[in-house]
Image (cartoon, rainbow, N blue to C red; front, side, top):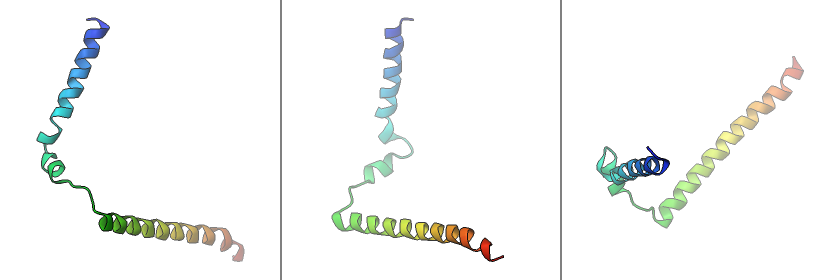
Length: 73
C-alpha cells in the first residue's frame, strides 16, 4: 500500500467519524445546543470570575498561614 492510499484511507476514516457526530449518543444534545444571549453570557462570566476569585483567596490564605504561622510555634 502506497503512502497516498494510506493517507486517503485515514482521511476517509476521519471524515466518516465527523459525518456521524450528529447521529450518535450526543446528537440530540448537539441539535438542541444554542448560542447564549448577552445576559446569559454575562451572568456565566460573572459567576465564573467570582469562583476564580474565591479559589484564589482560599489559596492565598492557605499560603499565608503556612508561611507565617510556623514562626509562632
